[in-house]
Amino acid sequence: MSFSEKIASVSDSLIGRDCSAIILAGGSGSRFSDKCDTPKQLSKICGIPMILYSVKAFSRCRSVREIIIVSREQDIGHIKELVDTVDLKVPVKIVKGGENRQESALNGFEATSDKASLIAIHDAARPLIVKEDIERIIRKAARFGGAIAATAAVDTPKIVSGKGRISEKAPDRAALWMAQTPQIFKRDIYMTAAYYAREQKFIATDDASLLEFAGLEVYAVQTREPNFKVTFESDLLLAEAIINSRKKKEDVK
Image (cartoon, rainbow, N blue to C red):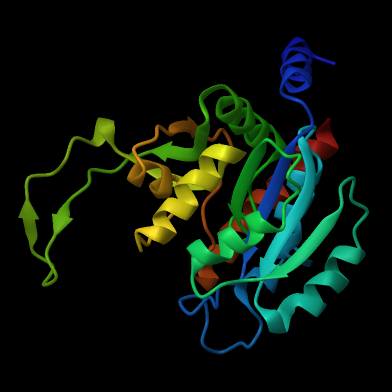
């Protein structure tokens, strides 16, 4: 075990094995393909259904004690069959999603063990997440209450009108980060923010926005490995190339 792995192990032992991971797999994938009835999160990458990459990554984390998959009702049986084919170190539960992403995440949260002090929420459409990045975000969330995977903007951002015209001065790129998942929070903090948002009828585009709406702090953690969201069919080719590259590196080791 390397020195960095020993430090991570000590840190994990201080946190405790107490994180519940919620994987959201209920989207319709309307931008992905209109030619296939298979949901995006069940499409195969290198011969393996996309959702299983995230499930495996979270199951390898020392702090994760359970995985909750949130799915469309019609996909629950199929996802259960897929999960049953994999030897996992933690139990997996599959629950029905809500009317939108926010409600689906809350459905997943309500299915978690009340013994878990941390809640991780991840999109199944981000199959490239790795154990090491998850554990770094877990440690940050355990320390500060809330942390998300993110990546600093590298291109020059522009504000564009509905007609395609650049309408305002470009914001400072140095302050702009692109939010990803997993987004991880202390249980009581997420619960407070999620139910407050429901009470106020606030609809968020991601889970961190719930905390921001409630006036709570969230920290960004730069991912060290690619973690983009598979949105279009063409994204599968890039995901496959990255996964194949990782496999080659593992063979070298």
